[in-house]
Length: 195
Image (cartoon, rainbow, N blue to C red; front, side, top):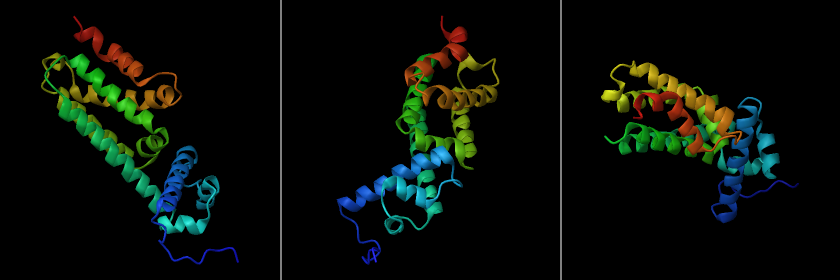
């Protein structure tokens, strides 16, 4: 026998919430490492030391779980870049960029597995990066310091640098968020804007 005959969705207590959280954590790790197509529900439940019926208490299927993770990343990412935009001020441009890059790298660092899914693996990732690039353009477009630059190129190259450095230096723990922000500032901005 061995199969639970409990009705679907009965777990709303803390034990059930722990099971759901564990499934999300393990799924995030496995999707991040193996990708969507190579990760099976059986891999997720085995990693979480739970059963497939438990999985189906919380998720319709693998795709719905994956889409939940993508939505979670997207919402958190957009919240972070909107915060960056709302905190932009007319002060020192280099200090503002450094602070904002640090915030972004800390966000990526706080959940590297989810970032790998949402910022690197999904079809929506390009749309998020485009939106991020548009935000950078918006923040920099009226700044006198950038009058001689094609802001679109600055924005796209900055997004590309952030993407690559996050993957190769932040996730490998070779650099801390503040260090990466400083190195980008030195590479892109310091020579032109620091007096």
